Image 1 (tube, rainbow, N blue to C red):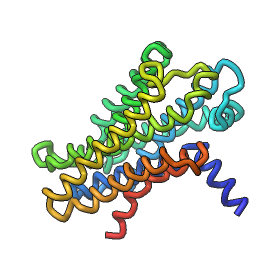
Image 2 (image 1 turned 60 degrees about the vertical axis):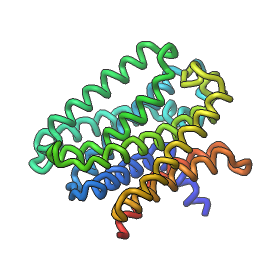
Image 3 (image 1 turned 180 degrees about the vertical axis):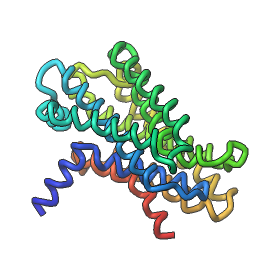
Image 4 (image 1 turned 45 degrees about the vertical axis):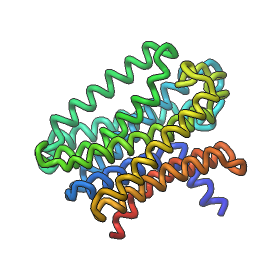
Length: 279
């Protein structure tokens, strides 16, 4: 059990659970639109997500005022010289795939555009520091959902996209935002010591707690309405998103969970769309 626990610990530190969660999200939107997405698109998404998250952690670890408070940033600071070349290698491999893979041609233009937007936006956040740090959670959630839904969306003509896609994309955005706001709430003291900003520069912790509750309940409320008015095909998608949002609330208000347990379990919730493989 100790070995398995250590593997899961480093799996989380390296954001590999986030990578799998993103792939599960792509599967969610592929199933929603009834599209068959090539495996190389999942591989490309995984490399992109890992590169973005790892780059962000590396930059945070390097800009910390002293020794970083969180184990994640300590890990990235310690192995900075090893992880940075891996990030650049993933970016290079991803670019080669995007430029030369025939089955990924449909992703070339939207992928380049989204990639450019991400680079510019991350640069903007880093340059302006804590002054605009309150935008980080919102923009990260939005970019996350755009990334995981890009391939299914781009594989269809715009006129053929199911209008319910946009509703589920919005609820997925709410779920991602709730997750990020929860982590910011839990990491408030550590982020303050390290000199990192978050949405807490804009609202107090009590207000953030209420916002998390409001967003989650809003998402669940919309899903209940969708379960009533939409055909049965969409019920499994509603249930999956409902479980993600509902269990986030349970974790957030639980008194028996450590901060690390909440982090790992909340990020693991985004693996739930893999249940679609059973249907």
